[in-house]
Length: 254
Length: 266
Image (cartoon, rainbow over all chains, first blue to last red):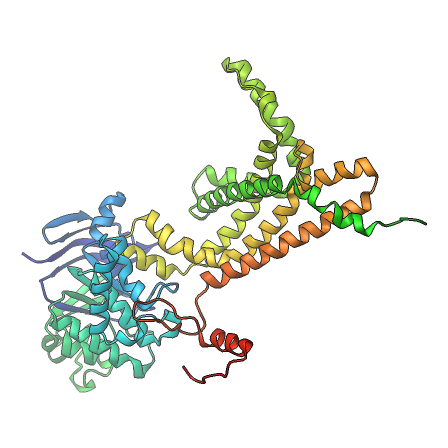
């Protein structure tokens, strides 16, 4: 059985259908990248998975536990959110807390660990992302790349069964992208299950073991990086890859 | 022209007036707490657009801001006993209306008046909190209450602290109207004193000095509070346990004060 099973996920903004009965299975340890043109619901898919957006319909099963995504019960929402953690495009660190306190926050407040235990875990995680020398820095004292590395260690410290990453490098200066990609790659190699939205195609090619091409709220293609980048089946995917310079124009057939 | 202005008396009667200072402070403290509590409640109701309660809140804030505080004090002073009489009459209860000390009316009126103003400050501060951080807290698995306590209040608090300090300072001075509810705080005490010796101008001079000094002390406290909640401009130095080491600047200045040579560097 898959670790995560999403069934019949639909979301509308007004009359605009963003997600149209999406079904998605994710195996444990898989790194799944969602690609597609802008406005096709990539981020919305992620945000519906932990109920930051409220979908019209859909269920999700994580680790054998089934949740209605339309649930109104805040208890159920909390239970669902504890399976997942999210890394945001804009980092969203708590700006009033130091890097260390940011990573400790969830451990102390949600997991109810003692401050000593939380501190130990947080220091370990910050060490992994190479932030040991900046644990007492506030977000405003850190560069974008450093903030995102703290945000990733904040998410990983909670040991989520599914890590959601919403365009983690899109808000960064080009020269800072790499340090974050290195961090994500390490998280992937450590066996974390990751659902990732990104525009870094080169990175997706080398890190993801599965790619989903989403368009107009539907999954158009689903396959390994090799399938997607070397043998795209649908014309729409070919067109997309040409537009982002990942495919030679000559192979495009009408 | 003898003794047109008795400067000595201005200072000589300050200790007598200060006998009522505890009443002023008590009134201020309780009105402050009522103001912040009710203000926060109204702010939360209005931010979340709770039906019915929002409309009541808007009406309440509009009324409280639209009527003078002295009128509100009279309304509380005469209105609450009338309301209690009705309650006694219709429910057969036996509340002792005359047993309520005047200060209670003043606390209620000043507190509610504060809450109307504070609610708008707090609402603006809540709206200034970055939505992304609220989402981050939610996706971490924090309940709504925890998000409020751990993310919204600390951040909104640091934004609201200046305007709330302003409103606290005006509250202190607002307590001088509590005489209308037969509360003897410092202004009332001064008026009583002047009633005996007819030295009204001197008494008001004494009162001006007292209020000013109280406000200066408050300003200092607020200033410290503000630096405490704000994020430092520079990364503070810490020892191995994570305790903040006082910055070099302070060390340097104390050294030069003592006439010691500056060691230079750390």
